[in-house]
Length: 88
Image 1 (cartoon, one colour):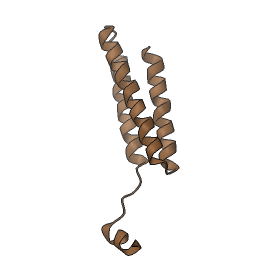
Image 2: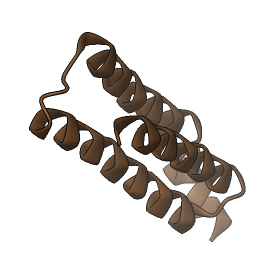
Image 3: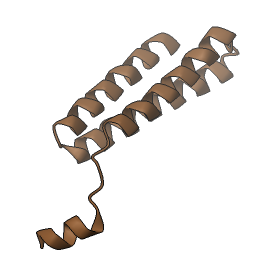
Image 4: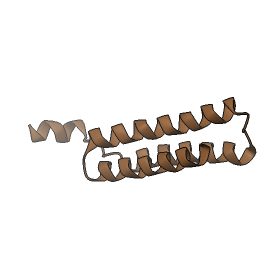
C-alpha cells in the first residue's frame, strides 16, 4: 500500500501545481489536501504495519518537502497594498 499511495500523492501534488499555474486556486487546494491525506495514510499504514524503515521515512520526508516546495513555487504573488488601491 505504501508505494502506490506515495505515487498517488505525488500525482495529486503535480495536478495541484498545474491547476495553480492555470489560476484554478480552489482545484489546486483540493488536490493538495488529497495529496497530504495520501501521505498521512502512507505514514499511518507504515506505523500500524510495523514497516517503518529508513528509505520509507526518507521518502515520506522528501514527499512532504516537495509538496511544500511546490506550494511555495506555484503560489501567486501577493499584490502590494498600493497596487490594490490603484486598481480600485
